Length: 358
Image 1 (cartoon, rainbow, N blue to C red):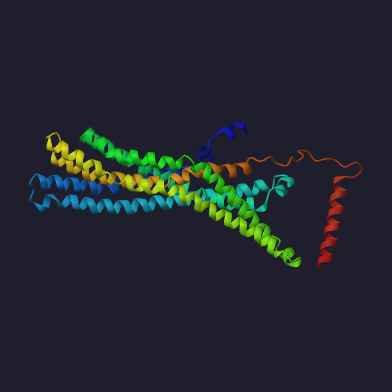
Image 2 (cartoon, rainbow, N blue to C red):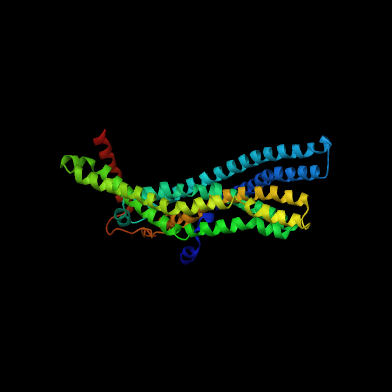
């Protein structure tokens, strides 16, 4: 049990999905192929520009590049669809198994634990927190892996062409990451607060709906509704305040990272002017740098999912690792009464009860 608790949330989540590891690996492979195909048009465009700068006037030499562009777009659609289908089937199978484990676990937990825990909390964990694993498993694993791996390869290729242009292509990315990091510093704490606020709202809703008959019977609807409304308003206001504080960082990051030409063009122009960078390499780097930021921006959309994994997994693990009701391993013997007599009396009582009900 101690070793189980020391594992990271990502290790625990991966362990829960162990029956479908093969499917997730396949989804990652197809996702990488899809992103690779999406990069092919950029290399084809660079090849076309290079031929044109060399004075090529034969359209036949350009046709293979146009065909490569079409093939790249088609491959992206096909491989992305395959990857998404595989990952989602494996994900929802994992969530189904996880919910079954949670329900089975609750049947073995002491009644005192069940009664002490608000019913809304169990609903939130089994429905909302388990569902919160879907973006992590279905999208983060295959798509984020591909969206980080392929730009890394492109960046290496740009450095091979010219290391100075490679550094220039990363300036806006670094600045954008620093800005986004200011938001990420408090994200985990903010999400934990959002979970607590959501729990209070869920408990208030369950309490209000479950006791509506008593509330109406004793004319206490005003006070009960006030508690319910306050919980709902507090939850909404929490998210409004959170988004208000977070938006300035995210908006800045989304504007800075794609602005790679702000550094590429002046640096490249200066190097080309001194003769240390050819025009063909200059235009090739320009086109590749435009394809560098797209996948990275897509990968950044999964930062939220990374930040909330710990909270979601923690709530689920708290139920799965809860102490179970101790059951006797051996059948206890009743003094003066045999097992056959107990079975006979039980059958007689059951028969009389069935006759009475009928």
